[in-house]
Structure formats: C-alpha cells, structure tokens
Length: 621
Ligand code: ADP
Image 1: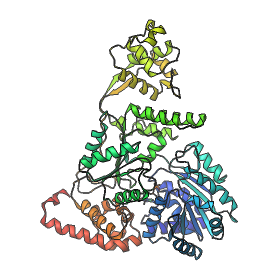
Image 2 (image 1 turned 90 degrees about the vertical axis):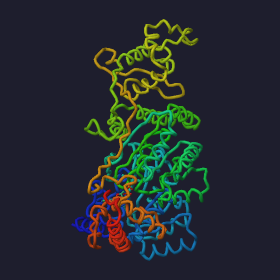
Image 3 (image 1 turned 30 degrees about the horizontal axis):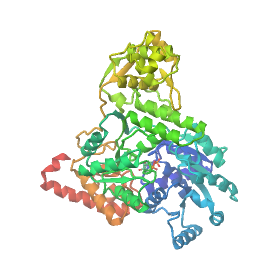
Image 4 (image 1 turned 180 degrees about the horizontal axis):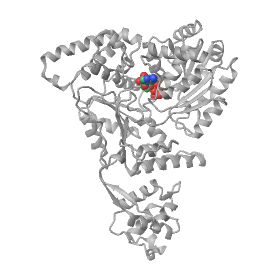
C-alpha cells in the first residue's frame, strides 16, 4: 500500500520538477525498488535516464541521499541542473573553500539538502566519515559504478572505499549502483565490493535507436573530418583522437578551415581544460577535438555527432564515447574512421603497459573484438549489442553502415578457400603477413627456406594485392571463420565455419564498395518530429529559439542545455504555445523552469511571428 502511495507521489514529483508525465519503462523498476528500500544494480545505456531513477526516490524519502560520482565536472553539471529545477542539491569536493564546505554541511544537517554529491576520495578522511555518520542518510547512490571494478575500462581505486564505508554505517541505507556499461565480470564486482547480496539487478537494453553507427575505412581521414564538420556547420560534435598530437593536428586543420573548434587533452592546464569545456557546453564552440580525457564530465545533451579519428582500444570505450551523441533522443551520428595502423599502435601500447599476463590477454581480446567491429559486414548494432550480452531478434537495423551500404555483395569463396587452405597446410603456425605472401606467391627467403613454395596453394591468388588479402583475413576473423591468437605475433587458425566453406556447404560474401554513411533524414514538413532535429541552416523558428536560449544562457552563466534540451525547442516549434499553461504542458518543462523561462520563450516565439510578416524566408517553416 505504502509503495503505491509513494509511487503516486513519485509521479507527482516527476511532473512538478521535471515536467514529465510518466517514467520510461526502464525507469519504473529501479524507482520502485529504491522506494521500497530494496538495493538496486541498474545497467542502463547513456541517455536512458539513470539520474531520475534515484533523484525522484531521493525527493520522496525523508532523509539525505548521498551520490558518489567520479568527477568534479560531472557532479557540478548534475547539481547545477538540479538547483536550476529548484531541487535542493549540493556537492562536496576539493574545489570548495572551508567556508563553502561548512555552509554545505550546515545545510545538510538542517535537512535543507536532499541530494549530496561527493567524490569517493573524500572517504579517505576520517573526519569526513565521522561527519557523514551523524547524518540521516536514507539512500546511497554509486554513479558510474563500473569504476569500482578493475575489469571495467575506468577503474578508480577510490571507489573501493565505498564498500567498507557502507558497512561501517550505524544503519545501512538502501544502496543503488548505476552504470552505462558493465560486462558480467564488472557487474559481479559491483555486487561483491558494495556488499549488494540481494540487490535487484536491472539491465536495460543497450540499444540507442536514435544513433546511427558507421565505420569508414579511408586513408584520407583528415579530409573526411574537415569535410564532414563543414557540412554540419550548425551542429555540435565531438571528434575523439587517440593521442594529444592528433588532437592538435585535427584542431589546427579545422581551425584553418574557419570552424570554431576547441581541443581538450590531459596535457592542458586545469584552467585551460575548464575553459574549453565551458565554451563547448555554452555552444561557443561548434566542435571539440579531444582524447578520451574529455567526456565523462559533460552532460551536454545536444551533441549531434561523435567522430572517432582513430579506432579506440575496446568496445566499452567506443560505446561510451560514441554514446555521448544524441542524449536528448534526437537522431545523431557515430562514425569511426579506421586505419590498420590503429591496431599496431594499440597492440604496442598494451604490450608496453607492463600488465600482468592475464590482464594483457584480456586487453588483447578486447582489442580484437574492436577490430572485428570495424570489419563486421553484418549489422554493426547487432554486433555491438551482442558484445554487451544482448541478443536481438532482428537481422538488420537499417541505421548503420553495414545495413545501409548499397555496395554490391561480392562472392569471395574462392579467396576464402585459398586462405583457409594455406592456414591448414602450414599447420596454423603463421599470421596474416605470411599467409598473404604464400597465397600471393612471394618467394621470400623465409618461404623458400621453409619449402612453402611447394604448397599447392602457393601463388593461387597472385593477382590479388597484399592489402586486400589482409583485409579479407581481418574480415574472416570478424565473421568467425578464422581465429587470431593474442600476443605479439598473432597466429591464425580455422574454425568449423571455415571447414564448412572448404567442404562446399557455404559461400562467403563481402561487401565491396565505399561505405555510405547513413544521414539523418531531413524531411521538409510543417512540423518537426521529436526524433528529428532540424538541420543546419534551416534558419527557421528552431534556430531563432536556439539563439534565444544561447543568449539567455550566457546572461545566466549556465550552459544552454541546462535551460532546455533540443527536444523542448522542437516541441515549441511544433506547438507554438501562446500561454504559460500551454507551455507548461510540454514534456520536459517543470514548474521551476516554466516560471524562470516561460515568458521569455513565449516572447521569443511571438517576436518570430512578427518577423514572419516581413521576411520571405518564412516559407522555410
Ligand atoms: P543518463 O544519465 O542515463 O545518460 P540522463 O539522466 O541524462 O541519462 O537522461 C537523459 C535524458 O532523458 C535527459 O534529457 C532527461 O531529462 C530525459 N528523461 C529522463 N527521464 C525521462 C522521462 N521519464 N521522460 C522523458 N524524458 C526523460
């Protein structure tokens, strides 16, 4: 009964503070568990709405909710957003002065704060732990919970302090652990290290239908990037590079092309990084070129594309970084630019990392899965979801470069058979270079000394280039016909799939043509769908409202997306509210925001109508 009442209250708070009339299906269960004081481990993809899952229960409960968060900027973003919605939230981290710290603690003790964000490093201080012990903590949330596990990709030793701290509390509060990516091993670590023995585990589908995924294999990456960014000049994007040097190179090229570009990597001073991050958040930069140091701390919801200038070292990093696109649910693009050199660099870095042998094997295996993604000729989304343990019933998503490639499917059974035979004939002792030399008939010293030029398959593919053969081998590994061992000198072996091909039971196909990057559709219609962000240069009401939001944001000193996400602007364009009442009915407009920004946006809309009478570009709308 109580749960039902608290559920109604939760819905009421959701409407009042956030302007949403219902929870998303994936949010229902974690919210309900936390309301019933049952521990939760929730694995939900970026953009699924994790924060609301614990923020609403925090508002329903009588005591304090402590949220552990790994990064200062991430905390600040969340707390700024909450405070803007009149939700009593505060943060404690190393940036506070003693006076600010005392004031926050005073507010917490007086019950004026409902959500307190802290960095786990704080638990290293006995003084601070004692202060926390005296607080009425009703709920503890561990955000980005994968940081607790060394099997994840973002291990932070300070997260290990949380478990002991929880155990030391006089009364154990309900605990919720939230993350966007967790393999089974990471999930188990989260449960064990936080002592969540009876937690309800919720894994939301990882799919992000509004994101399109593409892999582009091009030797001219820089040209591709500059051209792409130019063609998307009214949109925000992120370009990830593997090294600082590449960040600076791409930055230079884009700046020279006249694009408002920022750059970000760990080599910059704190001040400079902060400045870049702010400018990007405030829409003063069109694009940010960065290493993986950039991102976790930024909640910007209107990133319309994420390009990877190089292949990242594992799927976890890729999905997390690419996932920073389209958090508002509107269409966005994720494009990975692949070059064979990326593989060599990653292998080198892993081998130079002085990891324990077991750990090195794990890293190499992860890298191989990433390479396989780049060579996957079937649905990329399906492949990616399968990597995270989600098997989907469909074959094609129609929104990735594999599904959208118009290229001809070429039968490569003859090439496949020759390669498989060469591997078997040499007793699975060699890697791709040697196999390529054999089938292409190269009489190198190594080959003649080993007598490999006597093999029947020697020179069988003499008319095919080395690069093509190696590409095919990568693809056969990706599609499961071949296995590649880990380590410095990977060795190829055949699987049952290859044997079926050799026995004539199966044909092998390859897609051979330039990949066509799926583009977000730009229907010209009277109204814009929420799943469709108006594209560059439409010059319509959307752009007018975007500029208005930008101006307002800079006056208030907050990033534009804190005021309203793009999705609210789209609804404003379609609905064109005339009264505050109509405005308040729009999804995502809570009471506080309506009061603060309602009139100003109504005015902006009416101003635009005024323009319509006089300008001819009104036809655009
Ligand atoms: P995550 O932390 O999982 O990446 P966020 O908490 O940032 O996701 O939420 C992503 C977006 O979804 C935000 O713009 C948020 O306001 C919106 N959102 C969250 N819950 C709901 C809901 N119940 N209905 C509509 N939109 C929602």
